Length: 303
Image (cartoon, rainbow, N blue to C red; front, side, top):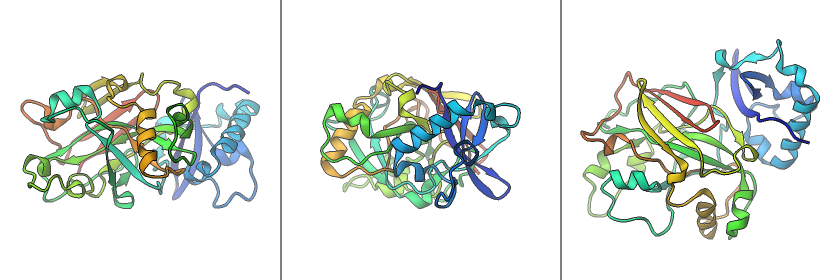
């Protein structure tokens, strides 16, 4: 079976979260598309699909191929939708730092990392949906943006080979790795406090769409673009990555078992506020928008 590209998301209708499939700007609830009975909790989150992604992907594509009329006049207009988090409870948020050649060149980084340099973000307090407001932290004066591609893991893996690595990826999402640069501008001798730097409430906007990996055959060939208040700040490509998605996964699985629901943010290109001359930082009233390939536009208002 072969179907044209589709994307998955979760939207808010009334007070309910509803998982949907999107094609050409038209949204159809997965409940209608699949006609599955007795699904645990209903289709309210995409994380449920990752528990058996290959099976659910086959069912979704069969539904799209078998009922194309659902995407017609009765479908929901994506332009009027309110998006929720595609994954309400990711297992882990694993972030890769200093991973773009052009970003390393703009920042005071002393050398190219010899392996993918990783840190974790706390999950429950940091994730935000597209369109959801992020409160500027009271004690942060150097709040920065970082457009990143997130690889969503759909299969368990440990000590995988380079040829196996991309097989762990169910799909991709936009990820804005918001950062408080105050604690790298004047870091103590012991090193960077990654929690204060990266772990503030709302510092991990994600979405709006989840794009299955089959529609991104080369994750190292996607445009990356971010703007603040309509002014483009980052305009690069995932081809600038020092370590590609497969290499990152190989490295991480030497340390930890990757599990369905893990999200790996793969680094940011040049154009962050801290690397600009003079530096620029986010303030209340700003709106950040980012797009990577076909993953839609992730919008983050700062208040």
